[in-house]
Length: 505
Image (tube, rainbow, N blue to C red; front, top):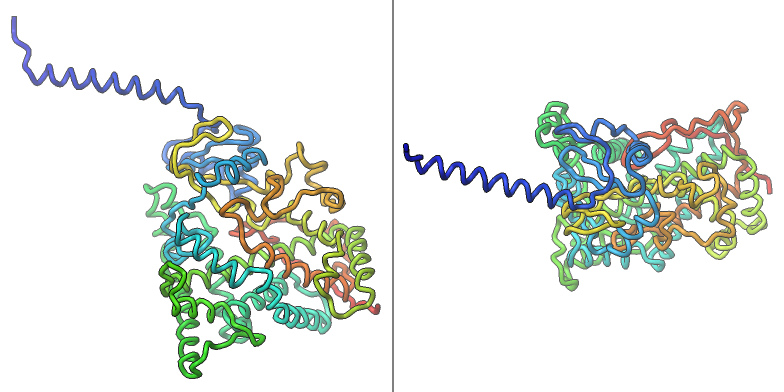
């Protein structure tokens, strides 16, 4: 008998061990109760099924293959898609701590100051401290009231612009300019909307939102990272990030020079400190227990600006669009505004609080048109179960707030604009009711809701009080194009053009 070489015996033994391990691995995998998932292709996963409007694509996939909880693969990135209030509650309340982190995306790091923004910072002590700074010194009710004069001055400019318009008014552009000017004055102490520098600033911010909402293949399919380089996307991200950094650096340096020259804390618009002053003062005092370095200051300034402009303008645009699409609703809300004000020129918060139909109109707009329909993604920090399904550590989570707010099990005629549904309904958008999540909920819910709604409500009341509205050239409501435009926030594809007639009352 020929002896079998030892190397063959060892090789055979290794193969047997490998097969046994493979068997047990597969058997343990089959025990996992994974969420339903659509079929996927090698390498790209389900990317080929995602169109330019993510919320619509995820809705279609959930209807066909998933349901309220669905697992898809965006390239190599496991992604849990949530499409029901019950599942959203489990993510954002019951197990909120396990989903409190954001994905670490290379593009986000470059654009968002190494993830030092409140919106994307890793969950932990730094995030808690800088969020507290944002809320206390920019977004609190006290600060919102302190900046009332800024809002009133900018609203007066909008009203004057409309009065001087000879023909139709581009309300989409007007809303963007208004929100930009309010937030810039509160944050930076001055506006950046006029002249050549204003054009450069608007172009820079437009490109910022464009790349931030773009498809970054390198994050999802590392094998295709070369496409981002070849298409010029990486170069554009780098250029936009550099321009933003130089802009923010210039603001900080200018303020430091002014403070040094005057030997005082400086002062923003309206005779009160702006956010730049406050952050520099906090850095100097070094009393918050976290290192508020120059990059962190830039991150908070960028966060204050980006979170308060495009999203707010989007809500105003869709609210006005829906009002013009539904003339009976427009008349009803105008009648309420004019009855409450009774000819008053000065509008206070008590007046607005008595306008229940106006608030219902805004809620219905936020239901149908959440500015960030899929919210900001989260990530599972450990293996966890969601609605009985096993979810692996590192899985990203997308909550389709747009889909949840159109659930026919919750909402009658969910695709219809009917503000009346909120007159006798306790559901609100502040993060306690998971049937309506335009601003998210839980630890990572948007802290700027009071600021945004004060801006929205005050401008809308003034416009409804002072003008009557119609579409240009005798247009009818059916002529209004409601097509959405892809992007970080979901705006109208075509600008809203209207004709305003000053009200004589």
